[in-house]
Image (cartoon, rainbow, N blue to C red):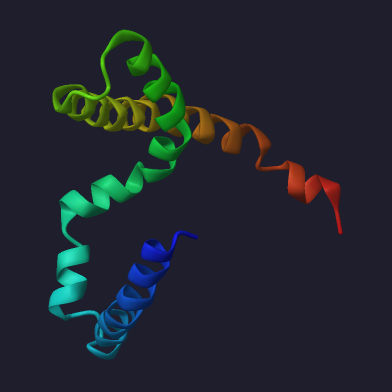
Length: 113
């Protein structure tokens, strides 16, 4: 780890732990919980795995087509990545997952102990 990053993590950990503790102690009704539970943030979190999976291929495609040093290209990359990941999760991954679960739900019972 770079020394600057290590220092940042050492400084950021106590406030993050205190905020998590305050959220838990407040019974889930505190400002921190309401902020992190905002629909916009939960929508972003719902597609975060797909963003993780697609970030490299989308970045490579953008690098071939655009100058990634330009701020406009970076903004377009981020927006494209999140839109693509969201559309993939909603229209491809979710239906395929449901279809597979429906077709294989009896397999565990048939396998026995």
